Length: 157
Length: 163
Image 1 (tube, rainbow over the protein chains, first blue to last red):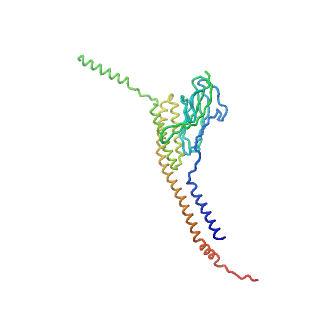
Image 2: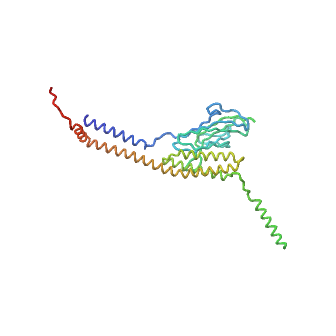
Image 3: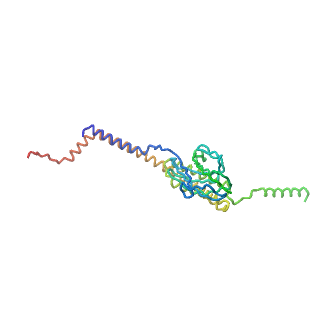
């Protein structure tokens, strides 16, 4: 082995070791997001109720995933809306809150929970809106994450 | 008793009765204040946990405890109408747990910072040592290799191979 080859091998090994030592210190940039899902009574994405009686209990499951890169303080707000209720990724629904579910979820953890709900007023095309809110630490309040979902229900008297 | 004294007496009694009747009767039902205190305690503790995690601390156990406090608050909200004393006890427990979490998160934060610094120093030490060894090998490698070769083969006899 000549001097030049030896120098190249030495430099390569040195670079490999230096890179391996420094890699854990470099922050990984991954997309940050929260997941929200509403599951049916059996915990799968099917069998959602379409019609319930007033004050009749029905069960759904909520699913929240935390991929924000840090621990999150979530609240899931269930609201009672209708066809005219405006809700989108930027605007939360201005509607009465039926129920609130609250949980602190660690990074890369998920939270699946049952929701026993009932509606105390009859109406066709009632929209049950699910909004995910998270606690903003610097602002010290809960803020709308922009994640939302809904189901349509006919509530019979 | 004079008439004016009698009037003064009646006025005083009326005033006392009025004060008593208008004073709020203290209920055993958990009021909004206790709920707000418990909610604020949990959110404040969450902020401490958040910063502890940012500093590199392992907050898994703290999150678990904080979720116990959250469950107690939700239980208290549900049972307030049927078991107000239980609701008060649950809110009190939730507040205590949240305060404990706040205290512990300081320790977790400190240990996380130390662990992070140790990792940083460890990595920098590895880099410096690697570069130093590489420089030494480059500058003195030949000489060391030859000395080692001579040491290993110090008893080696070179024989003529003319048969």
